[in-house]
Image (cartoon, rainbow, N blue to C red; front, side, top):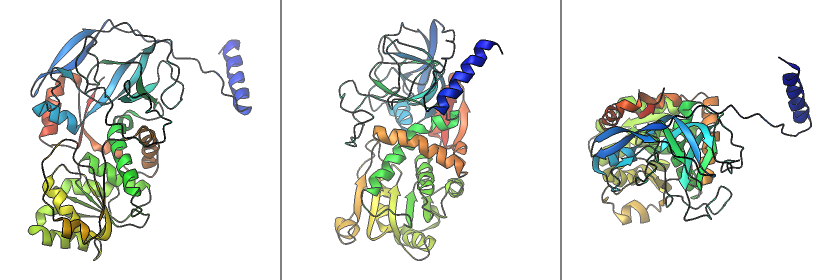
Length: 398
């Protein structure tokens, strides 16, 4: 260590003692290749690995070397049916990576945190057509109307999704510095934000409380994250409902107190009694419906007490109509129902604290990622996801 290094350390220590942030040297820029590989969905149920030139960055752009990206249910729908009409498209929106280059105007992330080469980041939405939606906008506006990397039409840049070696983050996009989180946690940020928003929506009913009896229907990644968030809030009386024993067992690891396998019951009356028994003879005060099944939606009302509440968050696309009886299911029981879809920017930032809290109390969120594939095995990854062989599937770049 030379005298210059010692002087730098002394200045940083003195600055911290005086409450002044000492300047931190940026990491040395890494060599950036001329081209990048991206997994492009070129037809239904098939990705091709294509190579594209990495473009020159604009003054507000950021180039990120992708480290990993989760495979989402939305990716599965696009892979199977292309409901958004995007083919050809580079998918992947649960991604994270390291900044390797950025334009001269880039100084801070969407929360005001400094950005430097080498920082680990995630993206949220693109709001070029709605600049009023910002990190500091308190109107709780749902961000579902914004663009999202990984669900953008193809253009002359091509590197628009996280299923790639590199991604170009355009000026006007939201981006967060999450260098304090490990890779697995960063991959879970986007789906966890969906549940943070759902819980915030549930709290608006005034019914969800510390000592509430809560039913969570559906124990895929979304339902399991819902259970984990409730547990970090101190809610303990949680009953998980699903048709797979392995998922129900994992729900208990995430914080559920009890579980109900609906396949063990004949008819809705018997199933309702099973849920009631799991709560010690009571119906739920509140329920989260986390499946995309119209039948499951119709059933969940039966599990809720008179005056209880429901948050429906399972339908990210049109899954069909559900048959309920408005008199018996809603009016006579006076059930308060809220819908939830995606998140606000503030929910997104809140998710970072949830992930830290979950880890601190020992919830094994890292177990949610059950399968990891390299980019060149992306077709196999999506087939594994469609076959429901695991929980969260992820593409990991070495």
